Length: 209
Image (cartoon, rainbow, N blue to C red):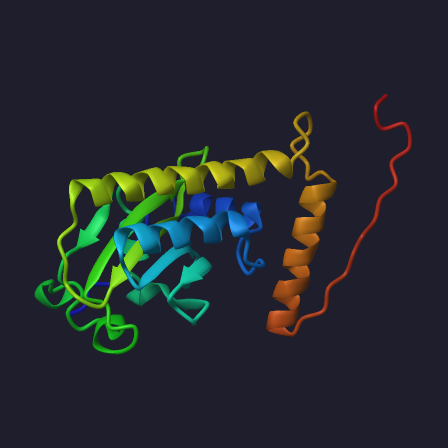
Protein backbone atom coordinates (compact mmCIF):
# COMPACT_ATOMS: atom_id res chain seq x y z
CA UNK A 1 0.00 0.00 0.00
CA UNK A 2 1.01 3.60 -0.59
CA UNK A 3 3.30 4.97 2.13
CA UNK A 4 2.42 8.41 3.50
CA UNK A 5 5.43 10.62 4.25
CA UNK A 6 6.53 10.74 7.89
CA UNK A 7 6.47 13.98 9.87
CA UNK A 8 9.93 15.50 10.53
CA UNK A 9 11.05 15.71 14.16
CA UNK A 10 11.35 19.51 13.91
CA UNK A 11 7.93 19.94 12.27
CA UNK A 12 6.75 22.82 14.48
CA UNK A 13 9.90 24.83 13.82
CA UNK A 14 9.79 23.90 10.14
CA UNK A 15 6.22 25.15 9.70
CA UNK A 16 6.93 28.38 11.63
CA UNK A 17 9.91 28.94 9.35
CA UNK A 18 7.84 28.45 6.19
CA UNK A 19 5.18 30.86 7.45
CA UNK A 20 7.81 33.47 8.32
CA UNK A 21 9.13 33.45 4.76
CA UNK A 22 5.71 34.60 3.42
CA UNK A 23 6.21 32.46 0.32
CA UNK A 24 3.07 30.34 0.63
CA UNK A 25 0.31 31.50 -1.74
CA UNK A 26 2.55 34.28 -3.05
CA UNK A 27 2.75 35.34 -6.69
CA UNK A 28 5.13 33.64 -9.15
CA UNK A 29 8.65 35.09 -9.20
CA UNK A 30 11.12 35.02 -12.06
CA UNK A 31 13.97 34.13 -9.68
CA UNK A 32 12.37 30.70 -9.09
CA UNK A 33 10.77 30.25 -12.52
CA UNK A 34 14.21 30.70 -14.10
CA UNK A 35 15.56 27.75 -12.09
CA UNK A 36 12.68 25.40 -12.92
CA UNK A 37 12.90 26.31 -16.62
CA UNK A 38 16.62 25.53 -16.59
CA UNK A 39 16.18 22.18 -14.86
CA UNK A 40 13.32 21.18 -17.14
CA UNK A 41 15.26 22.02 -20.29
CA UNK A 42 18.74 20.83 -19.30
CA UNK A 43 17.70 17.50 -17.76
CA UNK A 44 14.97 16.92 -20.34
CA UNK A 45 11.88 16.32 -18.20
CA UNK A 46 8.27 17.48 -18.73
CA UNK A 47 7.75 18.76 -15.16
CA UNK A 48 9.90 20.72 -12.72
CA UNK A 49 8.73 22.30 -9.46
CA UNK A 50 9.83 24.38 -6.50
CA UNK A 51 7.53 23.01 -3.81
CA UNK A 52 6.82 24.12 -0.25
CA UNK A 53 5.63 21.38 2.11
CA UNK A 54 2.94 22.93 4.29
CA UNK A 55 0.95 21.28 7.13
CA UNK A 56 -1.50 19.42 4.91
CA UNK A 57 -0.39 20.26 1.38
CA UNK A 58 2.53 20.81 -0.90
CA UNK A 59 2.25 24.16 -2.63
CA UNK A 60 4.20 25.07 -5.76
CA UNK A 61 6.07 28.35 -5.75
CA UNK A 62 7.18 27.60 -9.31
CA UNK A 63 5.76 24.99 -11.67
CA UNK A 64 6.79 24.09 -15.21
CA UNK A 65 4.59 21.51 -16.94
CA UNK A 66 1.98 21.24 -14.17
CA UNK A 67 -1.22 23.30 -14.00
CA UNK A 68 -2.39 22.64 -10.42
CA UNK A 69 -1.07 24.99 -7.65
CA UNK A 70 -0.90 22.33 -4.91
CA UNK A 71 -1.56 18.70 -3.98
CA UNK A 72 -2.25 16.97 -0.62
CA UNK A 73 0.84 16.34 1.50
CA UNK A 74 -0.21 12.74 2.22
CA UNK A 75 0.33 11.77 -1.42
CA UNK A 76 3.31 14.02 -2.08
CA UNK A 77 6.74 12.77 -3.10
CA UNK A 78 8.29 15.96 -1.72
CA UNK A 79 7.00 15.05 1.75
CA UNK A 80 9.38 12.09 1.60
CA UNK A 81 12.23 14.10 0.10
CA UNK A 82 12.39 16.63 2.99
CA UNK A 83 13.08 13.78 5.45
CA UNK A 84 16.65 13.46 4.17
CA UNK A 85 19.57 15.73 3.38
CA UNK A 86 20.42 14.48 -0.09
CA UNK A 87 18.68 13.71 -3.36
CA UNK A 88 15.52 11.60 -3.05
CA UNK A 89 15.03 9.58 -6.23
CA UNK A 90 12.45 7.08 -7.47
CA UNK A 91 13.60 5.68 -10.85
CA UNK A 92 10.36 3.76 -11.53
CA UNK A 93 7.32 4.42 -9.34
CA UNK A 94 5.52 1.27 -10.54
CA UNK A 95 8.36 -0.84 -9.11
CA UNK A 96 8.34 0.97 -5.76
CA UNK A 97 5.76 -0.29 -3.26
CA UNK A 98 5.76 3.09 -1.51
CA UNK A 99 4.33 4.81 -4.60
CA UNK A 100 2.91 2.20 -7.01
CA UNK A 101 -0.71 2.91 -6.01
CA UNK A 102 -0.24 6.64 -5.35
CA UNK A 103 -2.98 8.74 -7.05
CA UNK A 104 -0.30 10.91 -8.66
CA UNK A 105 1.09 7.74 -10.25
CA UNK A 106 -2.20 6.11 -11.27
CA UNK A 107 -3.77 9.36 -12.51
CA UNK A 108 -2.59 12.72 -13.83
CA UNK A 109 0.28 13.66 -13.90
CA UNK A 110 1.15 9.90 -14.14
CA UNK A 111 4.48 10.12 -12.34
CA UNK A 112 6.92 7.37 -13.30
CA UNK A 113 10.17 9.08 -12.27
CA UNK A 114 10.84 11.53 -9.46
CA UNK A 115 13.98 13.24 -8.18
CA UNK A 116 13.82 15.91 -5.50
CA UNK A 117 16.50 17.83 -3.64
CA UNK A 118 15.49 19.23 -0.22
CA UNK A 119 15.71 23.00 0.23
CA UNK A 120 17.28 23.96 3.55
CA UNK A 121 17.17 27.41 5.20
CA UNK A 122 19.48 29.02 7.74
CA UNK A 123 18.02 27.31 10.84
CA UNK A 124 18.37 23.89 9.22
CA UNK A 125 14.69 23.42 8.41
CA UNK A 126 13.90 21.73 5.09
CA UNK A 127 10.94 23.67 3.77
CA UNK A 128 10.44 22.00 0.41
CA UNK A 129 12.24 20.79 -2.70
CA UNK A 130 13.44 21.51 -6.15
CA UNK A 131 12.17 18.45 -7.99
CA UNK A 132 11.86 17.01 -11.47
CA UNK A 133 9.23 14.56 -12.72
CA UNK A 134 8.98 12.36 -15.79
CA UNK A 135 6.10 10.31 -17.13
CA UNK A 136 8.53 7.55 -18.12
CA UNK A 137 10.97 5.60 -15.92
CA UNK A 138 14.54 6.79 -16.35
CA UNK A 139 18.06 6.57 -15.01
CA UNK A 140 19.64 9.56 -13.30
CA UNK A 141 23.21 10.30 -14.31
CA UNK A 142 25.93 11.84 -12.18
CA UNK A 143 25.74 14.93 -14.38
CA UNK A 144 21.98 15.21 -13.80
CA UNK A 145 22.55 14.86 -10.05
CA UNK A 146 25.21 17.59 -10.01
CA UNK A 147 23.00 19.93 -12.04
CA UNK A 148 19.94 19.47 -9.82
CA UNK A 149 22.08 19.94 -6.69
CA UNK A 150 23.56 23.18 -8.07
CA UNK A 151 20.13 24.54 -9.02
CA UNK A 152 18.77 23.60 -5.59
CA UNK A 153 21.65 25.52 -3.98
CA UNK A 154 20.69 28.53 -6.10
CA UNK A 155 17.07 28.21 -4.93
CA UNK A 156 18.31 28.16 -1.32
CA UNK A 157 20.31 31.32 -1.99
CA UNK A 158 17.22 33.06 -3.35
CA UNK A 159 15.24 32.07 -0.24
CA UNK A 160 18.07 33.32 2.00
CA UNK A 161 18.06 36.62 0.10
CA UNK A 162 14.34 36.96 0.75
CA UNK A 163 14.94 36.46 4.48
CA UNK A 164 17.71 39.07 4.60
CA UNK A 165 15.89 41.61 2.45
CA UNK A 166 12.69 41.57 4.47
CA UNK A 167 14.03 41.94 8.04
CA UNK A 168 15.65 44.81 9.91
CA UNK A 169 19.13 43.61 10.87
CA UNK A 170 19.02 45.11 14.40
CA UNK A 171 15.49 44.27 15.58
CA UNK A 172 14.72 41.32 13.26
CA UNK A 173 11.31 42.95 12.75
CA UNK A 174 9.92 43.13 9.22
CA UNK A 175 11.12 46.20 7.34
CA UNK A 176 8.97 48.01 4.76
CA UNK A 177 9.61 45.36 2.11
CA UNK A 178 8.91 42.58 4.59
CA UNK A 179 5.74 44.25 5.79
CA UNK A 180 4.46 44.68 2.24
CA UNK A 181 5.11 41.00 1.54
CA UNK A 182 3.45 39.98 4.82
CA UNK A 183 0.46 42.23 4.17
CA UNK A 184 -0.04 40.91 0.64
CA UNK A 185 0.31 37.33 1.83
CA UNK A 186 -2.28 37.96 4.56
CA UNK A 187 -4.67 39.57 2.08
CA UNK A 188 -4.29 36.68 -0.34
CA UNK A 189 -4.86 34.13 2.43
CA UNK A 190 -7.95 35.89 3.77
CA UNK A 191 -9.35 36.21 0.26
CA UNK A 192 -8.76 32.51 -0.38
CA UNK A 193 -10.39 31.49 2.92
CA UNK A 194 -13.13 34.17 2.75
CA UNK A 195 -12.10 35.79 6.07
CA UNK A 196 -11.91 39.41 7.17
CA UNK A 197 -8.63 41.13 7.95
CA UNK A 198 -7.77 43.96 10.35
CA UNK A 199 -4.73 46.22 10.66
CA UNK A 200 -3.51 47.56 14.01
CA UNK A 201 -1.14 50.53 13.70
CA UNK A 202 1.25 51.89 16.36
CA UNK A 203 3.16 55.16 16.06
CA UNK A 204 6.13 55.01 18.44
CA UNK A 205 7.58 58.34 19.48
CA UNK A 206 11.28 58.54 20.45
CA UNK A 207 11.76 54.88 19.57
CA UNK A 208 15.56 55.12 19.21
CA UNK A 209 15.98 56.52 22.71
